Image (cartoon, rainbow, N blue to C red; front, side):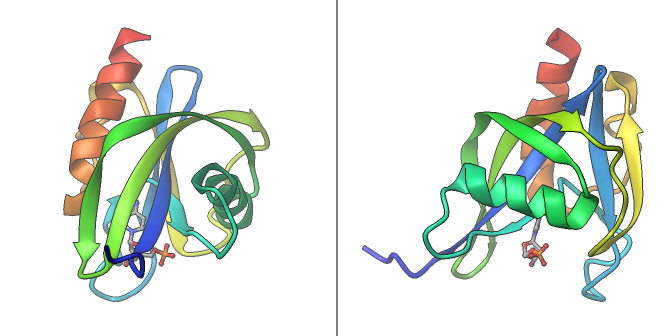
Length: 133
Ligand code: DCM
């Protein structure tokens, strides 16, 4: 068992039938690509707590995690990405940290941005959920 891996949690944030996409401003190799916003779990946090904290810090919004999107994606050795759907409770997302643009994507627009490769499977599932809702 290797428990030293780092878990990164990201949110497929839904509001009014749209999915939130965030454009990274750093690091250089990821800048300009779009992601589901989130970040690393801190010691003692549940994934859901980490997600709520990261979305508050990065976007200035309050969210409620809904369900895990099945699967886990390797970001780099020792780092895995887990994704939850979440709904916006309050606030209008702002690119406060790590991002320089945000977009709310309608179901027919979910392929319109250049997603990070590692986010694509979760985005595809989030888009499917969005179209069904
Ligand atoms: N990351 C990713 N996809 C996401 C969120 C984060 O690939 N939806 C990656 C980018 C970084 C690492 O996870 O390598 C940590 O993210 P951050 O820098 O936002 O804490």
